[in-house]
Image 1 (tube, rainbow, N blue to C red):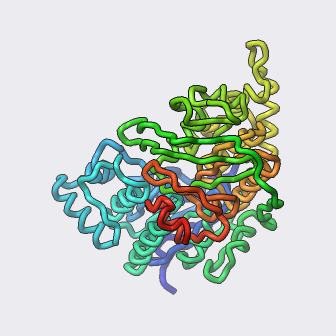
Image 2: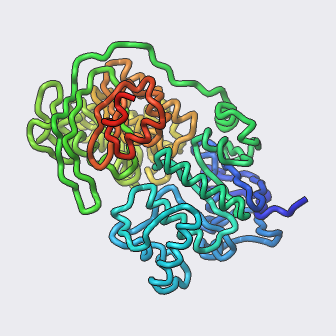
Image 3: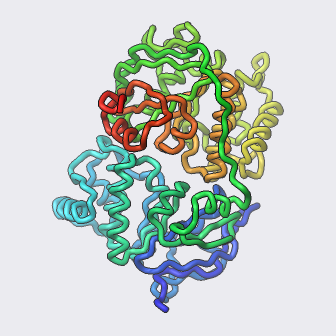
Length: 505
């Protein structure tokens, strides 16, 4: 039997109050694309951090090429042939592609020589990228290419990828998969983490499933349905979001030629956005990251004020109003960036509840903050949305990304908004949690709320949207009925068709 490239034996890592990895063993062969699956808090991140030298295991062993492998830091892991592309890019917007890549290399060559290498590698692996471009001008897909090429320049034997397609169009996903298949054919092993199970079925040779820190199963994704894999992850039957048919009500939010300049040199200006949003309706907005999603949410939430006449709520002009005033009226928002924007990292969940729920939940009375009430509200969010945390006293930064996402969305949903604008509602959460969040959004609409759901997950948008529009370079395509629209049409709209060429396909 061929010796595995990487072998993990009985790895265990515990933190106060939780065993993140409990006796985990798995093997990855050279050239294998191996999926690591599990719900939020299952232990995936801790496991790959041990492989990459960011975390030291409490017990157990790792072997690379049959020899002991115990990297003390990422530099040692990279020297042994391990590369990692993180879910959140670590790039400097004001620097060029070549300068960013040089920062992540040991003994980087001179910039001219490095630029030549970047060009050669990008062409070889079908990831076209100019080394001289400024990163702030790149799309999300191009930024990911920077991270991948930085890894490839170090000739990795094992490439770890964490949620690599969360910000890509369908066309960009195809390009990425071609690259990964080429790497696999050349003998590079790939450890692939994703909640997009149909992608796992398309790409991966094998899968290991974690639940509550333990290995609970293995499967061959091509021979296993996405639903079966999801149910292995959560240990129970998966509920499909449902919604009873209903008619949309009156227009509650109207945007009329909404224009706003870019907030900074790397932001996106909003250009002539016009739409009507009705009570009980879910409008899905797709688009590659960086095409105006954050700017649109800021203009709707009140974080950015806009001139009069552009944003009307129930017939009243709310352009000059800030977030607190809009929340009081019933317009709530949840931004994409959960750590630092949606939640203050070092504040407790109770304190984070106070930050956005004080007005609608009556947590400030007569100038005094009602902390016991805030704690009760935080506890109700934790319970209803199954947030895995020791309690409301825990700091936001102590939660896994998926659990913080559940808390942030739950905190807003439970305030019963009349209009709710949310960007990437299920980013980084497992299949079961994603289904629960989508059901909560559908329940809001069923009860008469109007929703704008901005997402790069096209399956999500098609599942919950009544109408669909696409953002590209700050322009919004004319919304069209979601039923019957194809992923290919959506991809064209996201890529810049603005709905005009494909609106009547």
